Length: 168
Image (tube, rainbow, N blue to C red; front, top):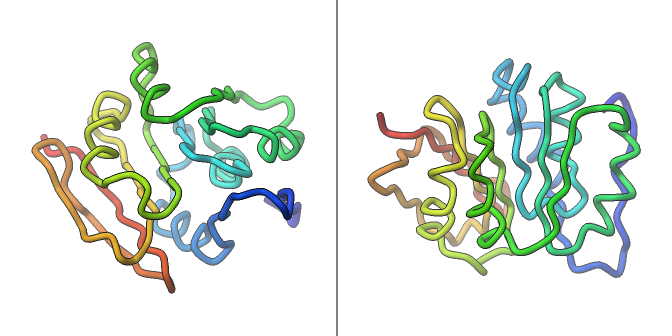
């Protein structure tokens, strides 16, 4: 993001993805970000979607219950194609029927949602050749279902980052 800083309210209950984790994720994604439609779920500060835009993504959609931290940071991508959806992601993703995404990044509050529920709710929103990335507690056990297969998993401290593709 060319040295620009993502900010967040110190008294908020968010746990932003660390710069190290985000950098590692984008290193793995490589050029898949360019021209991608990106969905940043439980986005908090919006750092993932904002960085995706700065790396050439076509659009970013942000979902979170509390958008106060996000709205402050969106000035970093003013003029770019983005959408903000306020609300619980399990309910809001069901309504995203007109749009699908190349990359979905979901970083829910640790241990609050099951990986099973996350995969089920994501299946209709991810394009067939897309990548789903879930960041959660390193205590979460990997899980696949009839729609998704794990293509990579990384553990960074108390976080695990799991990359999924659709089974075709």
